[in-house]
Structure formats: structure tokens, C-alpha cells
Image 1 (cartoon, one colour):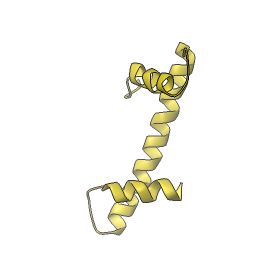
Image 2: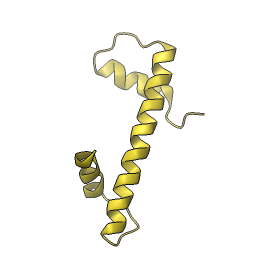
Image 3: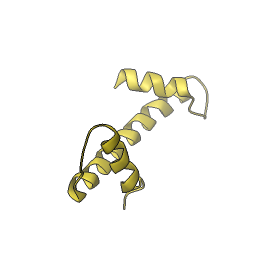
Image 4: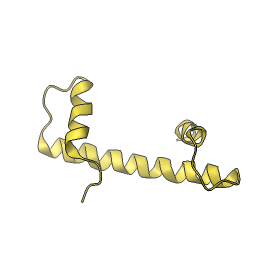
Amino acid sequence: MADLPIAAVVRIAKKNGAERVGSDAAAALVAKAEAYIAELTKEANRLAQHAGRKTIKAEDVDLAVKSA
């Protein structure tokens, strides 16, 4: 079961130029977005731990994006 709401992902797709989004495409977008967020979180968490913190900060996320 997806954690991200499909409607929110469809709204993002439409704001970025998609006129219509099929249900299969919406489900695929949700799955890919969740996978990306999971990997980004893992890397940001690793960076936070390396800095001696338990809390992920925006700087950890920024660095995680750059290293991806």
C-alpha cells in the first residue's frame, strides 16, 4: 500500500505539464517517488549520523541529493 497520496502526485504531474495522468502512470509515479524518498532518507540519515546527530537536517538532505 502506498504511503503517498495518489491525488497529490497527480497534482504535481499536472503542475509540471501533464494534461492527464492514467491510473497506472499515477501508481508508477507514486512507487518511484517513494523509492527515491526512501533512498534519499537513508543517505541523509547516514550523513546525520556521521555528524553525530540523530536528527536529519535540511543540509543532510541537500548533501544527499548532491551525492545521488
